[in-house]
Image 1 (cartoon, rainbow, N blue to C red):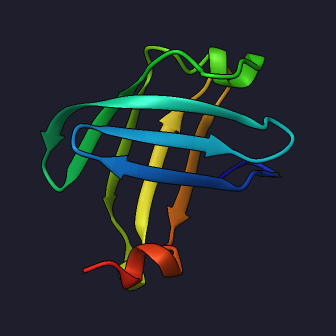
Image 2 (image 1 turned 180 degrees about the vertical axis):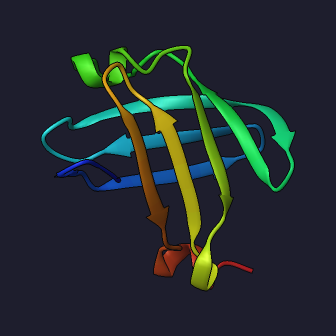
Length: 100
């Protein structure tokens, strides 16, 4: 994930109607997001309550996060935070790619 000159690692685990988002240092927090709607080629989720605190993650509550197909099999992610909009490209993990 990145915004302006800041880069932060993130992992997302999807299940039936939710996405669990983990942000690496310096945020080191997790935020669940519930499925909200389809919008053209994008899928929109809404962030819920952070499971382990941290101002950054707490401030995401109620904000929408959008996922859409990206280049080279990646998944583009976009969401607004309190100060700016974050963008990123997620790539499948080897474990996820190996599942049938």
